[in-house]
Image (tube, rainbow, N blue to C red; front, side):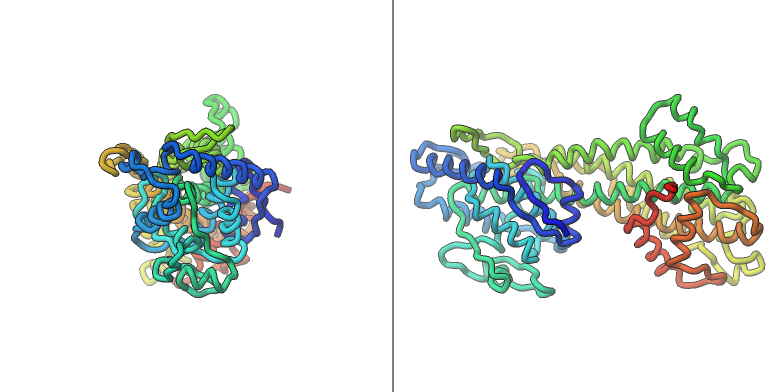
Length: 515
């Protein structure tokens, strides 16, 4: 696998996935090393001059007016990390922590933060040696960034003169959960004593929120491709109408995502003998209006991706250092951009699951599925003795209802902190966590529809062996059948649905209409 080289400006979501999930190694560009070293010299000059500069020789938050002597710089940074590592809840997944480490390293690599080169190199060593700090998932407001999660991260790779193991946090290394001190020792990575400005540079910024956002964007795009396929499979299975996907119809409205979905359905179902075979004038909304519903998710994803990729290449701590060594205090740590786009992404992905579940319902209802058996039991004579796919639709409905709660926007909620100095908070981390849950739920809902539609198509083919599936849907059908064989009677459906979900997340349903 290629090494990802970071310079503070060109990190992509695909790079983040390669490091977080696939274990790609990371290196620092020479230009970034120069920028980091230059900014560090500026910090050292400010400390020597002694003029008050927030975060370098003052307290933090409500204590911004309190001057800190130069000889206490290391203590100031250490106290910041210790006092702010107060998260709670289940630990974040390893992939999230790895993504956050990469994003933070990239932020510092821009050369506006004033840290030593050793800080960034140590973060990269965590990734390359597979030391993953244990970081609680709850307790961040996303302003002033993800203070708590980043402080838990910092506990592992930073220390002080006393080097107490009890204050080193926890980390996983080679399958074991250890104290941070022990994990770093086994990996052969030296822990750092932070100096002036470095504590704040490490824990200031909506980094974990952005990391969650990057992974959610990547998965959402995969699921939107899957939603095109699940729609096409169901359209064929219920012998739906092609008119609703007419190119002229969607061009008349002009939304890019809507036109994209309609085009995908035309390509996937090209050559199908099932589409239009039932003689309906038009279909229910879950089929007829699917391009409109699923299309806006594609349009939204473009905006969200752009915002997240901007954020992971942003300088997000405070203050920032600019040539010729001027420290400017502001609010780049505020997680509002991430929180808002995560809420928006959560809403559209919840809608993807919602309309998918409605199609699964139609597939299993004997009054709505164009003369297929109720609940897609193998034969009418087996109805009652067999429940068929009754319960997978229940599961889909349950996940959709959960999504409807999770999709309630988080970024509109704020409570003041730090004695009203921080009087508007983004709630970005909660928004990102909830959207990640929505995306995971939506993956399962889509897998249920694909699984159900595939069974329905099997029954269609049995009714008429001359039936022709579409160019793309035939490939999707075969992809499912290669992993999951048809079972006539009731069976333990859950593991089979999980297999279909694995196919979905492995991108097996992308590019099916290509020759």
